Length: 157
Image (cartoon, rainbow, N blue to C red; front, side):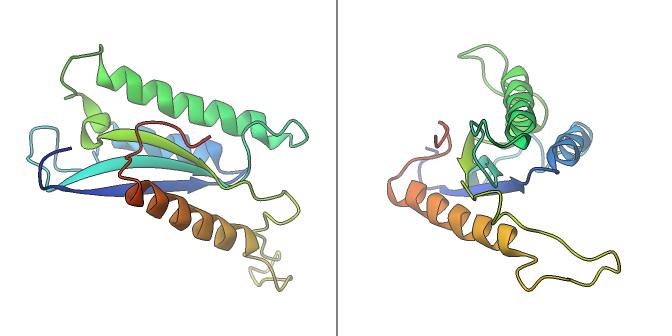
């Protein structure tokens, strides 16, 4: 665990319509890493945590299959950059992170709302209910990982 280094999480939330944009943002990391580079001595152990606002296995939600493919693509890229088991991780943006985790916020589709009107002004009083609920869930789950002394080396499923 890096001795005295503290452990932090970089959390990447996404919702039902955000999978493609999230994947594109990881492509940008191929040229602009989210850290000083794999040879820099980090002051923290940093876990990358991907958070989907709903459940990935919800068969009644047509978006869950697309979201699951998004998470699988991120996981595959992370593992590809890590190389073979036992080989020191020094390739690409994956070298910036100690582990990869997943949080499913499990927000019901009817409550997973992030809508503005066509003029950019919210038409609903609860227009940001989804992101607010996802933020609260993420904070509770990341704090629980910290309290338990666990990093993001395994999915929270």
